[in-house]
Image (cartoon, rainbow, N blue to C red; front, side, top):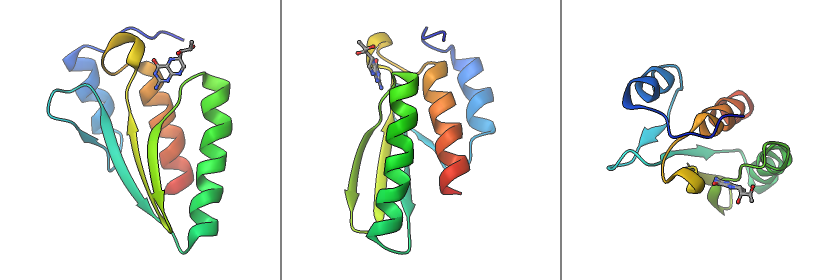
Length: 97
Ligand SMILES: C[C@H](O)[C@H](O)[C@H]1CNC2=NC(N)=NC(=O)C2=N1
């Protein structure tokens, strides 16, 4: 998969179709928080993401406190956002609703 940094235009187009994700101040990362019924649901969600992250060789920065999962996506190799972040964010949205 292409891991070039996305141009501002392409990034804006992608974000328009991506519910809930916030672009950080310097446009190098996107973040979203999810809340679940309990820890079990939150950790199940994280487990499904972990398996996909390995398949994509693209990994989230994240933290979990009980039923909350905070996720930041960025492509360290390019110092910003790439198609891989968009693919992973879409996958996460399908899981997390
Ligand atoms: C060597 C390995 O493919 C790279 O370090 C991958 C692993 N996972 C990664 N994940 C993220 N989020 N960004 C990267 O640049 C990245 N690079």
